[in-house]
Image 1 (cartoon, rainbow, N blue to C red):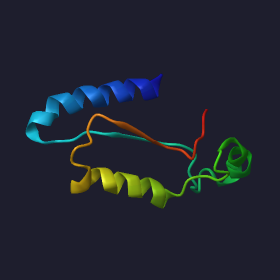
Image 2 (cartoon, rainbow, N blue to C red):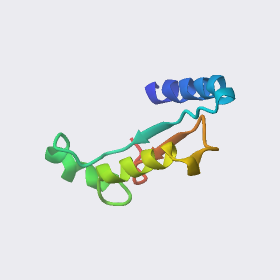
Image 3 (tube, helix red, strand yellow):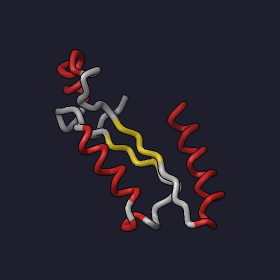
Image 4 (cartoon, rainbow, N blue to C red):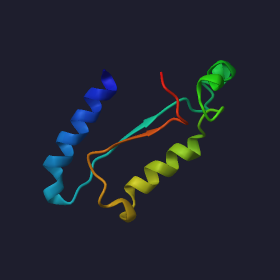
Length: 87
């Protein structure tokens, strides 16, 4: 429910800020390798179709792209980056 609320908020804000040339997007990462998830990684991996957790660099790569000029026509979107994971 929270992800849906954030997605709706992003769409609304993107409409409000579009006339100023400001883009607003939402990145929804799935299970990601961090110090906090290390203890549970082996339990989560089988739930991810790609068979592994995401890397922080992969999440950062998506964020960097969305912040770049190349993504200037993307706004109001929710980008899921989760290796196919469905909770």
